Image (cartoon, rainbow, N blue to C red):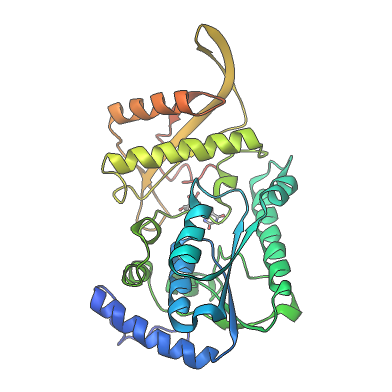
Length: 326
Ligand code: XMP
């Protein structure tokens, strides 16, 4: 097994050929480590866990059990994509857990951002633990730890949700991309045949849309976040901004304002658009989105998304604002 320090001689994986060589070596090592035993992986659909899943499918096939927990806070189409790519196309052993009601019930009435994060993290571990207990003969736990996680947080994936499993569920760790940087993980993911929409996607926080449905989460506002985010992503893709802007999303606050539609008064939520650029997420600048595009997106959101009557564009850099609103 590899240590936690990237050797100075390790070549940066920048080309498909280098990715192929890495994959071949990893597949051999994974087979040697895992033998005929079973491996468990929490598969969120993010770049890191998806690449680990694809590597393990190549190495040990059906001995890998992927658990995808749908906590209701994923972006539009994400749970479906995980099932389509991994179960239907890659023939993975995938357990899909619909935990939407569980999470939303636990979060009901909780407005404090850090409390929301804690509840989402803790409930995730509980759901994952329950699924792990249903399975026999698991000896390994795979994780999408990458090198910045090791450098920045003493080897613990800061936003990784499966840190806190109980004593009797401690498995041997399998971390095949732990010495890679994010750009290298993407090159490997591409070589493994994962779709671009998975490999090149923008960062997405672990607590997902939960921290973009501001204050206490309600189902109507959560749907407004999800639908408006889908429109924003679609329009950015159509207009050449996907892959150019570092992170973009919508947030919906927990207050309403007065509007008018078809001659009738409305009292509905605003949608806030945020689009920022950064290299390390410590500071960020606001993308200069063409005004006509903002107007078009506003038109679409206010006509297509229920319970919304206003759209705002967040002009604040980091600092003094953070990237997320919570
Ligand atoms: P902020 O809002 O602190 O965000 O400027 C910096 C980057 O971190 C992401 N972020 C999170 N990622 N769990 C995560 O996995 C979280 O709780 C979390 N909070 C913020 C944010 O999306 C941005 O990319």
